[in-house]
Length: 439
Ligand code: CO
Image (cartoon, rainbow, N blue to C red; front, side, top):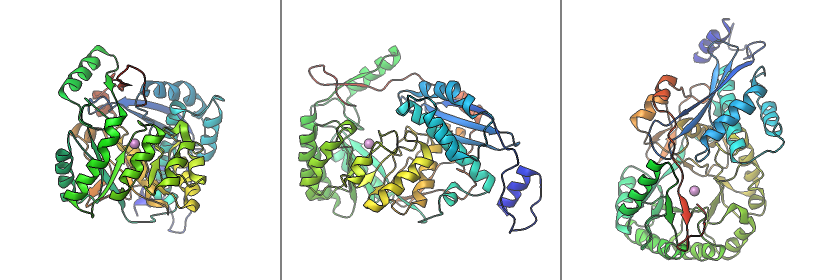
């Protein structure tokens, strides 16, 4: 019923019956491509780059997410200056053709800026296709392979006690899987942990001055601390709760092997990003010597980047970010590549991608047979709810989306304009000797 009503408004023609084929309006063309950069939360990681693709059919348009934290305006400019002229006048229904065209057109291709831009366009085109069909995108991808998506949330603290308390609160809310992070003793900061007061003040000062904050990082103390955190949590929380941890590529290959082995007795759900993507062969070190499941992929920018780790059975979860790897089209392809290798999906779903991408993640996750888990932000502030009509909903350890056509999300552009781009930089990570280190 809803589909038919929608098509009627789209084509102006009443459909004769259920047997009639769904057809895109004749001569449908892309007439405009607009980019909206908005930061409703006014947070350092909160700039979202949204793409709107407008068509020749009144009221038919699609929204995508091209957010790439750290190069937001470069992506926005790339879409406006280099993709828009290629897109105008094209048939938006020819999604795969447009994807291939935009991928090859720059010749010097790939990388985070180009692929984030392409991801945003891809999502917007899926949104349009779903609206034309009157179906949610997951139906176009094969339909629901499951009714809801296992999810997890992050718990972090300055010490074990704080992590434990946070974990108890989330278990009470129904979470079955938790990502646990703790600040190592002697460090002022770390990845995804609360900084010290001193670090917080220094970071704020840098933001005010318009320069990147600096954080000092030493991996040894961190590597020693994490197995103790797991031991503490297993002792206090028991065996039932699943625990995972994100290294964020901040350690050396031998440290990663030691950590993966030290965590083995505590049966982690997975160990995330233990090694740098540039050192793909080092994943063999872990695989040969321990059974800790390994997840990798959020930093990859295409279907080729992680291929070696998949075909060599060196990881257990692919964690591509559908905002950076080529969108829904690439996500579906990667899942298909991984399926015969027994590798599951765990698409990157952090706070610094918008609810559009969070929904895109869910559409793919719902439809693939080899789904593992879906990271997903659900605690959006009021300002974000003003801009975005919906986000995945959380209930008892799972997330879900409704059956609205397309991606199922609307953007209030006036509200978005109230929260413009905020200039903020990621921190520079330095060792104690002031040498550069991985983020
Ligand atoms: Co990560």
